[in-house]
Length: 419
Image (cartoon, one colour):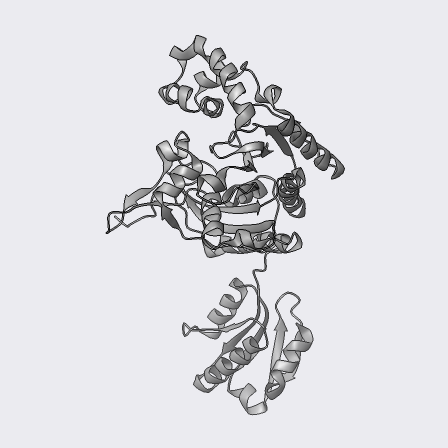
């Protein structure tokens, strides 16, 4: 039996890669507009970083990590998200000594061992934004704004912004007391994972995907009622900045996100067009992560956006991207002398940034013309002994059928004039 791709992975075929390239280019262009610079981190990190950064009580650390020992016995993990590696790199290279805030983005594969589902694979790709060094709610609003601006440019509709604040360590402690008091009456009904979270991190129970746990917490106290003055002011500041940009949003007290490092702002952007797993972008503030990773006390905020989910959303809304799938010129050559000349011409065309190709399969003239049509050539040139002798060729517009005569030794200029 033929070897197939591992479960939860997907090949991006040539017919699909144009869409990937288009959205990735748009992401890079957007970041340039927002003065955000790219960072590239390794595919794998020391397991300790992932455990300390993401948190021991998260589903990722407990159930979903791809972890192995290397040949020296060191524990290595394929990165399950992009934030902790970016923080590690920022600390390791002393980038906090440069003018702040540090505004970074990445487009990277991430790995999570979970049940594959629509738009969520075991290897998927993430577009992430991180702003390091600012405690201002304007930074929180900016990352949300960039995400929504990207969706606007892609003409994505039916999106909802859901925001919440999960406070800081000070108000979180008060909330945890109230939450644990509420949960005590239903301890026996919680799943085993949530029973373990009860003492270690009860806030994590709100993020459980088990139906019985969802039912138990639906009437639980909400953390927004327990915010300290600083966290409350910050949340009000976020709302004001979103208001001034004209964004509508819902305050959803059940959003806590799936990672332990979050503080204050958490948010999700939801699509109602891709089924139950409707979160297309999520993020928030993580002011304690730098210290957790042995760095200086730096506030930070960011988001992660799954590229597969973005493409799935575009597909569900029948949004066609303006992907170039045509080649400018195809030369159909007849005979060895013509083949050599065609090879020389397509090389010159490419040097002039004109996409060009010829036959490499010894097809007949009819076969070459069919191939030209299949690869969506805009113009086709037939080159044989007669054309070589007369130093003239016809350039055929494949859409209109119109033909333009040109001198062979001036073919580059002729094509430039009509492309």
